[in-house]
Length: 536
Image (cartoon, rainbow, N blue to C red):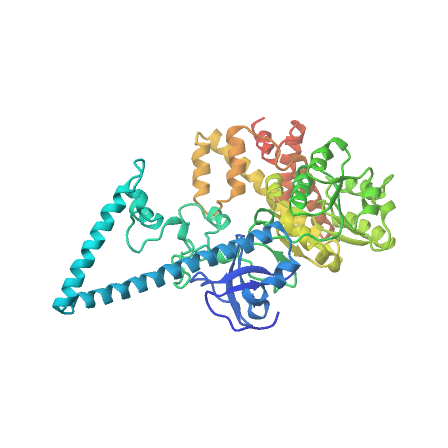
């Protein structure tokens, strides 16, 4: 987009990275949010979404001048809702201007009338005025006689006058429905900052700086796409599956594996308008998605052969290999140009082997394991770690936007697998420590609830900590992340450390606790059921 002359308050089309142009308004950023270095940019609040970002000036276009052009190239439902929000904002702004101009005209008329009354009048003018007043009184009397018996005096007043009389309000305070639509408070950020430290709020007047801004607010912004470390991320600060600002690819999408994670992913792909063909080892799990508009594939090979990009999300290295190399597997459907994206959490050796066989048939390969749980999958808030074919990563942009809040490209095949295992090693070890702390509190006569309250007020406070502790306190271990899978990831992370002669004693200790929990028949419960390894 060419550079344009813009200023605060302008309506614009803003383009960020690989996202389509979106309508927004240039507003003041939070006072503690520093402008990125380098090229000139503006802080933009996007209509119809929870998103806001620093956008380079060359990625902005005036709204009105390019409205027709943008409407032609974007047809999504959410996009149209965003455009409707802009038009509603413009209508209300126009209404305020008209009200202001009417007030000015009334003031002028009152001044003229006052001047007219203060001017001395002659005898002839007095006689004419007296006659005129007599006629007016007569007409008013006749008018009253013509009012039907079922009417009231109120009925003769204008709707505007009646509304003003019925709804008195203090001067200077606009009604609720007249608030500035351009900068609604971000519900996602509001939720993330709920608690004693939540101080950030959008102000209704963009001409004034935002007050009391939370200094950590910038962590949730669409602020950049290129990281200094060399990795690349497609960022959507709030769930794009929630706000819907996704233009679906026209490529046919396949998906293999409808477990806890895969089910939420497919649901969000369908919601965002993607064409999806599904397959699952247990065919009954496909029925719900067929009802939502998905197509059914009879085998993995059939799905791959009929789709442009096929995703897979299965439980472990063995399942990942069987899916590709087994009878009627993925490999049998691969032809030159076919794309395969493995989202399973496996070791680097497994994913490297799969990449080699896919590429040897002329296919394209990307690994893209996801960090999250069932709830985050359902909400479209996963974090995607990708590595392999960079072009395929770009082609998956709309899919990643639909299923996750952020995706990172980490380079060559194997890097994403390693990073994912490290992330889950930290998470699994932390969960075991939480369980250990709660049981120690219990046996020493301390309140487990009080311990949780203290932790929630300190530096360890997090959604993960609170949810897992609540699971334990309530004895509810319905799986959000299977215990058997976190133990598998710990085992693979320990092996990763062994391969490079790096000690992992904390992970090894946690792994033994999870193995104990598995022996107690907790494999298919949530990872928080590791607590039971300490009480038996």
